[in-house]
Image (tube, rainbow, N blue to C red; front, side, top):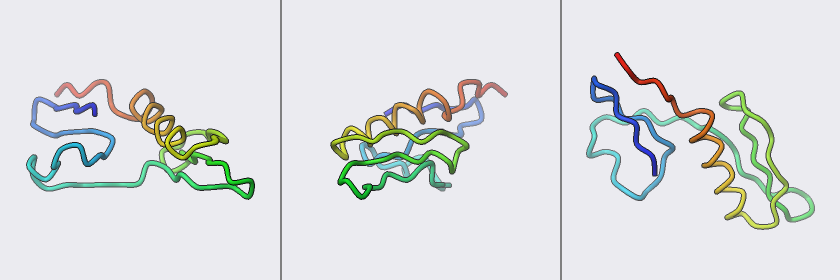
Length: 83
């Protein structure tokens, strides 16, 4: 889990339950994507909530979730959090 912490103390990340994010303070959580099965039993990732692409299909949900997280961390998570 990548945590980016600005000089003002704001934490940005792709949500996960690896740690209790509430320990950082008030949370503002928003949807970054949808991971859904298709009619063939495969999994698709829809990143349109963050103006991203469609990924998949994936044979396993776990592969779709990993692809989702990788894309969000590379393309959506801010890289410049300077003041």
